[in-house]
Length: 247
Image (cartoon, rainbow, N blue to C red; front, side, top):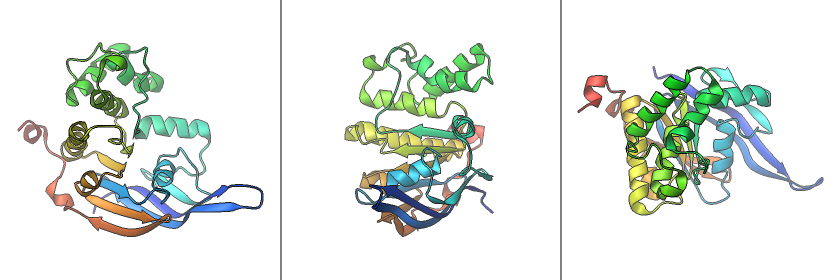
């Protein structure tokens, strides 16, 4: 049996437009995602995709309903507790990379580990370099964001999101600002992380090609799941052993 890594139960999200008017973004949504899945979330603009992603990652709270991450109910956590959970268990990648301009690639990737405080400075630097190697940025350790292309900046952002070995990797239009070649490279990187590291990946995207290359596609309309299809079998991409991953 696959392990459920993320569970949403009866999620409702409303926005108060004024004292008298409330807009329902998500009326009532329940969803389970298993560890090791690669899920794309699609739908028209305004369908609630990003809102759903932020609720999954604890960046936004539902009006009602519950969210469990890695078996832990996160809906009622304080902001301090959520900061810790996000740092330890969730990796975020946005449409814009949000790298700190004054720091180089290694320093940017090191930030979540510095905040976490569980590794020595030497261990942090070594892991940051290893992660940059993994995303094919081994020649850019000392480059600052302004010295990198858009695709390279997004690769550094992905390495940073992986810093603390998150349970889930959440992407909000991660290829939205990239040309088609860079977008394809980012997709291949997500796919490799999913196949080789068994990394759970959930991506909101308008890119049809990207969406259909995931293992599962969920389409939202008006905050409700219109369709939820497996695009490939989980058995086709189990976690690889170290030996297999080298080939």
